[in-house]
Image 1 (cartoon, rainbow, N blue to C red):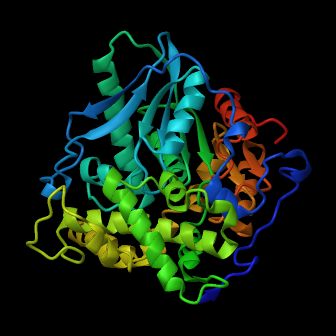
Image 2 (image 1 turned 90 degrees about the horizontal axis):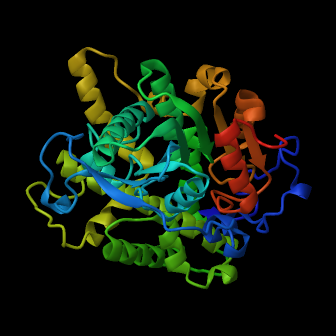
Length: 438
């Protein structure tokens, strides 16, 4: 059991990149900002005429094999498309861990870039259930190059579907942005497109990406082992948070971590201790892993979560299976589900087998270091006190991106996404390739 203290994670600020004196985001506690986000009165004004948008189903199949009854309500890959009534650039947005294309943060970014004059395509994370079922070749996300390949196929299919939907639509240029794990995905998609030269992204923006994936996962997972001061039985608090997240999942049939956190805490957030907030963040992350494990188990018929031969309908409660999945962390998913399947295929092809260390190295930004340094069209925004990064990760960003990096002194993990100064910076980079004062 870990005893929570202020130094649980290394929190610091690189003042050479962003001076805290000039940055006015009001929440300097990384746990509170991660859960609470940006107060709405500090959001930019995104009002305007109604957005032209539609959910587009991709009729060309992107995944193989039958769809089990548990996912019978999701039989086609789906993206959300918002279009301008004039020629405009288009931007793809990739959601974070476990999130669907209509997650609250993706919706916010859609409004930002739509008001800035872009057509917008919203994409689910490769770790979300709907993507795993309908757009993944293996139904086993977690290897960044593999996930990027799946995303790249979905992007190409989306462009064809958009052309079918509106043949008079004019797209000037194409851009790409992602947040959290979606930012890591976006980097690998950009590197893939640089080789294949099919789409041709004008610019790519990474918002709060993990740098060393294993460390990011370990940082989040250790939050589930925090000992909360004043609470005798942290397990009881863990289970209460789990039950509330499970109820959210039951009502919505998916887990939007951001919205679910807000629903779980209600108005209690400002009265919660740092330990409680840390535990809540850890449980929410573990729940998103549980959803991934549950989906991967059913789609690959491994019997590790749902016994073989036991059918699950779309209306059946998944809570008992999620309780079982909650005992899995990402490393266990990697070792018991992902690597065995991947290595079976590699063995059949005569390729060398992947170890856990190999898998993490191949799914972290440093493997793309040479490309990231030379690609002047890709930038990154991050927070010095983000829960998923450490000093070495921030140093990598500074050394690799230079003036194409903007590091804020605080904001936690994605807590300052909606802050007006951040929004100005993200739109500025996408449009000009530069951050003011970076």
